Length: 524
Image 1 (spheres, rainbow, N blue to C red):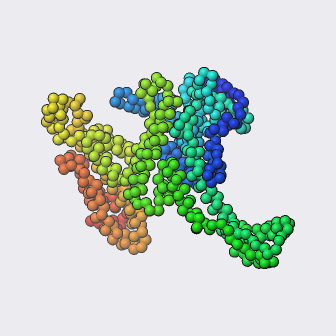
Image 2 (cartoon, rainbow, N blue to C red; image 1 turned 60 degrees about the vertical axis):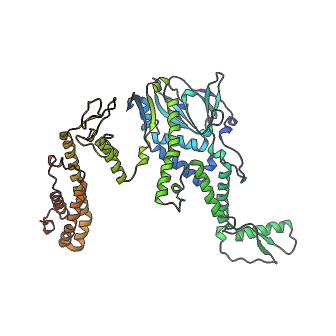
Image 3 (cartoon, rainbow, N blue to C red; image 1 turned 90 degrees about the vertical axis):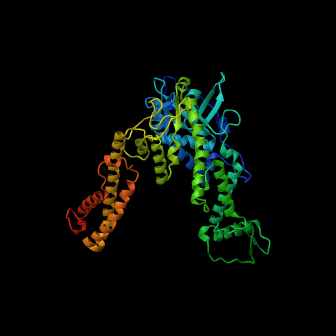
C-alpha cells in the first residue's frame, strides 16, 4: 500500500469514498480473442515475447539520464537547485530509485496504455517523490466542476482514495478518445491470443507425452460405467510424461486411432515465430534484440539498433518528457525556461575508432573542448583542457560580404583563440597521458604474458619474450603520438618513446621477479 494514501500531504487529506470495482473495468482490457481465450494485460505479460519487449524498451529508456534543465537565451544549465532535479535523476521517492520509477511508468503504459503516479509534496508544496500506482486499480472521471479526478481502489482496505488531478501524473499511450490511453494489448488481443493459444497447445502437447489425441474403437457396445472405466484406465496408462515410452497391451479387440493434426503439419513452430514477429512489430523492437534474428548481419543489426533509438525510444522519451513538464512543472516554471530531457547520446555510443574520429573533428573545429571529450569517455579532466581550439587558417565572412585575414577577428566574432603557448600546455598534458597509458599497457603485458613466458622458459624465456615485445611497444607509442603537430613538438617534454618503453619494462620485470634485477631486464 502506497504510504501517501494513508497520510496527509501538504496539509490536504485525500478525500475517501467507496467505489465499485466495475468503474475500473475499462482499464482491464477484457475481451475474447479469435483464438477463444481472454486476454488481459496480466495474461499477456506471461508471454515471453511481450515481457521481453516491455523489458527492453522500459529498461533501455530508464537507464538513460533524465535531466532537468533551465534555459536562459541560448545558454542552458542543469537545474540542480530545483527540488524536482533529484526526483527525476536519482531518487524517485523514499523507497524507489528514479530508475525504478521510470521503468514502472513505461512498463505500465506499454502494458495497460496508462501509467499513474501519485505526486508527493512537502510542506512548502515542492515535489519530493513520485509513487507509481497499479494501472488496473485506478479509475478516471470528471467531478462536478469538470476537472479530472483519480480514484485508487485498495483491495486490502476495501475502499477508494480520490485524488485531484494535481496530485497525479498520468502518462498515456495513444489517445483516440476521452482522456485514457489506448491499451496496446487490448488492441492487439487477436495476435496475442493466437500466441497464447500456440504456447498453451505446445505445453499440453508435451504434457501428454508428445502424443496427438487418439480415440479407442471397441467392437462391442459399452455401458456408461464401462466407458468411463476404459477411458480412465487408458489415460492412467498412456497419458502424461511419466507414461512416455511405456509398453501397454490393448484387450477385447480395442484399436487406437489418431485424430487431429500433428504439430509439424499445423506449422506449430512457424506460427510461434510469426507471432513473435507480430508482437515485436507492435512494440517496435528489432528481432535481433529478441534473439530471433538468425539471418541478421552486423550491418543490418547496427541499422536496426539505430532505428530502435530513433523510432521507438525517442518517441517514448518525448512522450514522457512532455508529460513530466505538464504535470510536474508550473506554468511559470515552464515559461522560465525549465524543461526535462532524456540524454539519448549514451545509447548512440559507437566503436572506439568512430568515437575517436568524431572527437578529433569536433575538437579541431572548436565544437568541443578536450576535457568534454574526456568526460564522455569517463576520464578525468586534464589541466588546460577547458579551451576551444580553432584552426589558425580559418577566415571569417563579415556582414558586408568581405573576408577577413586568417587568424584575425575580435572576441565577439571568434569563439575562442588559443595561442601556441596555451596549446603547448594542453599538448604536454596529453603527451603525459599517452606515456601513462603506454606504461600501463607494458606493465599489464608483463604481468600476464611475461609471467607465462617465465613459467615456460625461466628468465631466459622472459628475456626473449621481452626483446620481441620491445619493438611492438615502441611502435604502439609512436602511433599514439602521431597527432602531435611538428611545429609544437619542440615545446613539449622530450618524447623519447624508446626510453619510456625501456624504463617501464625494467620496472615491470623487477616487480614480477620480486625486485631482483636479472638478465631479463638487460636490454641495452
